[in-house]
Image (cartoon, rainbow, N blue to C red; front, top):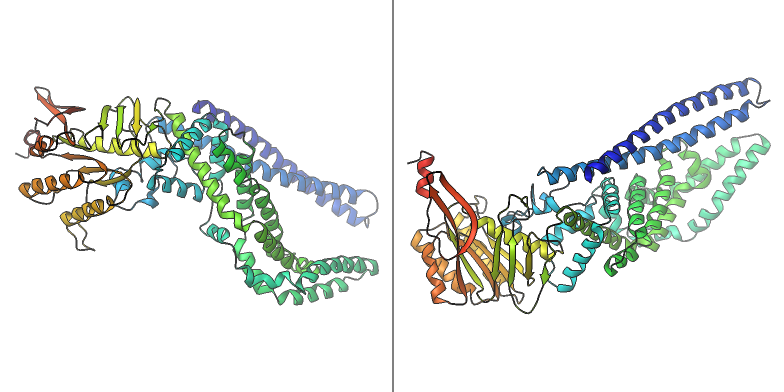
Length: 585
């Protein structure tokens, strides 16, 4: 499908390129004709029809200039659509996406770092189909703070299902948001200006001047033509510039606030128009459509206003401002725009961001048709899954396992030798839970869960800057987890080989005490460890602690792993064998 769409857009791009080529020829011909007939009309002192032909060719030239701009925009959009479909093919073949990978959200600690939520080849990188700043931030925030209410999760699931079938809408929205080319200063538009600081421009005498002066300018031009003397225009222009000098500083501040963003505003208008015009069924989607209903009109007004305001940078700005006080009119128009729409701007951007998140979830669903939308339950703190696989791996390559935790045992001890799959399974559970709680499908045949907060401790590093050792960094993380468990909301705790920074006896005793502490809180916990002696805790806390393991097999063919989780305590070891194979011992 993506290959066919990419080919179709490539053909359209080639057609538009041909149009642009012929357009350039016609523009050149029209311009040369304008010069030739203009020269001819000048030679005969504007008698005959040469001047009419000159004006006609000038009009034709301007028409082709405007149409060329439209063709270039179409080509730019088609280039993005081609890139989008090629990117989808790359992702399905296991290659990296060109879209943002969410590295700006990396913190180096917490579940997002432990589970590979952000960065290259991350969950964010795989899901992301956002182009605007607000869309990228919204997706990052959803992954940082997944939903914990059934209603929100099910609403986003339903929206993702509906949008998955709307591939044209989804790709058009992504393409147009990629064309935004936003600046960081765009945040200033959301916040607006201090209206009180500029309010005098809306009062007398500037309000009257804004109405009267342009009319006087038109009269001055007419009078100058009538008496065949342009000195009147020059005098009136100089007087107008003197009048404008009293507010030049304030007007310039307004201009700098929104300057040179006419294209950006028109592109936003297109994005909001796409959202408003699409036929939506789900109430949440319709609600978001209503939220941006006025946004298209508002940004088209702002784009046109900037087209006039930017004339202050042209050679004609002296006459435009002197005769009509153009800067004053534009400044007042923006203040009026701000008064009418400013309170809605942030909500419009937020809504666009949420639509891009839903677009991302829908794309993820469309690319993974075998993934299922999980079921949410609130009666019991538990997770039950079958055929559970790592969502960032290809389905054919991933080994799947079953999971049942919280029914009744709330803590699972997972033992196993090196490289047997313990850590990968913890990440599999964590990533699928995040997907489930943002309303996305999960890699499973069945997935029933209670919404949970994620608390993890996988790996830590020494910090010379903070003068902390590996062991102290881990203890600090565990302290944060225990403190977080004081909150009433239940959590899923994922721990990978805790207490690695101390001796084996201390590690065993410390881990055992930590497990006993976790059992006193409202949480589910999965702990991967090499310490098989901790397995006795299942006998001490029957119904609360269960033992599971991943095994490796040593045979004549070498060391093999099946990455399948079994009940019980691991029996095999492979460290000595691996050291021998690598020539270490």
